[in-house]
Amino acid sequence: MKINSIRGVKDILPGEIEKWRWVETVAHEIFSRYGFKEIRPPIFENSALFARSIGETTDIVEKEMYTFTDRGGEQITLRPEGTASVVRAYIEHKMHYPPSVVKLYYIGPMFRYERPQAGRFRQFYQIGVEAMGSANPAIDAEVMAMLLEFFKDLGLSGLQLQLNSLGCQDCRPAYRETLKAAIRHHLGDLCANCNQRYERNPLRVLDCKVERDREIARGLPKTKDHLCQDCQTHFEEVQTLLRTAGTEFSLNPLLVRGLDYYTRTTFEVVSSSLGAQNAVCGGGRYDSLVEEFEGPPTPCFGFALGLERLILSLPPDKTENIGSPPDVYLVSLGVETQRESFRIVQELRASGLFVERDYEENPVSLKSQMRKANAKACRFALILGENELKSGKLVLKNMANGEQTEVLSSDLAREIQNRLGK
Ligand code: HAM
Image (cartoon, rainbow, N blue to C red; front, top):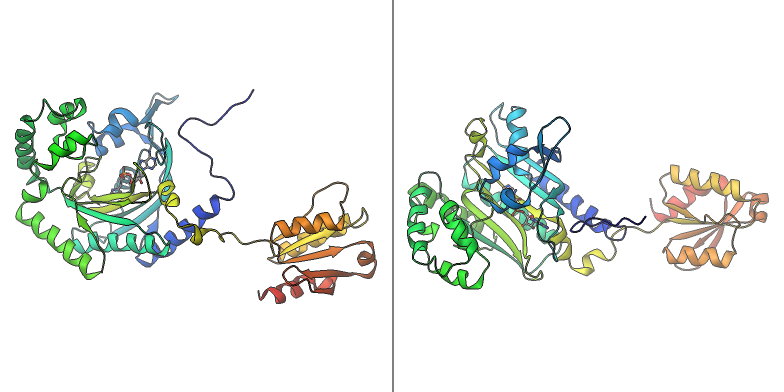
């Protein structure tokens, strides 16, 4: 019976995984420099956590969650995003004691039942960052600057940081009503989806992807013109600090995001090299979410980026040499040498060298093994034939210049390491 993988999920194979590891290594390095520490929340949680945080009327909660009842009768959901879990963990582990800004990041798979297409999967990976415990606009600017530094180190280009502010619990309700009143005049022209959204989640009408609706949306009242004084001041300061950090951005008054927990600053980074699914990263402030889950007042700012989309945008020259070739290929000739080859390979690996060998049960010719060493771009070939076995000296061949030397079996590790400058 042949079983294939499920639609919308994919294997990340050797050849590709090296890029992933490299991106993750750069993330660990840069985020640590900004004081972020890694957290690994579980992959499934109580369904109510996501429904309440992301919002009952969002696409994610209405249509995209992988939810099931477990054998104990609990409603479980495979996480569609990471922020809700981090907020739960923050409260559960009382991370607000002692009071300070808690900076966390996570890397892992998320699950959404979306229609699969290029750059959109049902299992996809995110790198997410959450800075918890400060309303200071410096946090917003610093985290976005860190993100762009990360993208720059990866060699990404053609990216645009788009910024908006969605206001807060004080100014948004009045704006929502103003927006609804304006939308009411266009209901006949808006798509069926927007007609549904209008009552329950009118802000989402602003970022409908239907071209005709986009045109209407451009004429609707924008959040940025309806912010209270505090939100206005916050938004202006975020922009000033971004300019101070030399971080380029543009304002997008139609940017509302697909999750309900956002307040004030929201942003996305879009890539010109991706097709329809061009959002590499999205995030913003969520100042009331911790309190909604019975935690103390904790203003937060964070983002998550989609690793598949990021990896698709990597420039080829940055990634073609990722993953180092083997240091040594052990060429073993004849049946008699097999056990000694095995011993030497293990000894060299134990000394820290990356060693490859041939696994044919009936040893193949020197020429064929050298071809394999070449194909793997090994730095050295180490040749052990029956003569070498008797003399205790092996032939070490530098694959780049063809130079050959005899090396005592007992000196191999040290000798190779010297030559590799290790
Ligand atoms: P989000 O915009 O839903 O935000 O997802 C963030 C990123 O995940 C997107 O920009 C995209 O790159 C990637 N992504 C989302 N869905 C898919 C998919 N089906 N296939 C491939 N990639 C996808 C969040 O998840 C928030 N939790 C971000 C956040 C953190 N806000 C504050 N803190």
